[in-house]
Length: 172
Image (cartoon, rainbow, N blue to C red):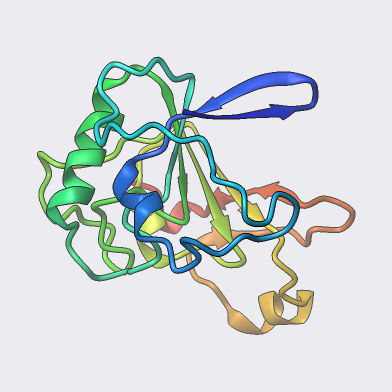
């Protein structure tokens, strides 16, 4: 179990051993603590770890690839752990182009979704409490020239995260 202190709050991060043991940087020290062994659980399962928030990036940014067996196992755990879920870009198990789930019995049901840069097409069909767009440095002119149908997105101004509003023509 890795631990962090964020704004003077104790945070516990349960890490799946598969995800950490297959890192391209395994064995290489980075930053402070170079060469030190990281303290990490050796158990490969998340079991009954109590969590308040699940950050869903399980399937990565693939828009049209069905989840692997490991991804499906992690998705099942996320759905049964009784925590709030925030999905990055789109919920795992969803086709980013169509908004349809590959297998409706294997889905992530997020409370929130944060899109990085631009929202993907399938995001319109996702049921969630709120959708947000995070600023990753795309110039405002790109938003104006893109002509993204189905969304109303304001410019970031001095904010790093802004709400995404669905336009009436695409609400479901």
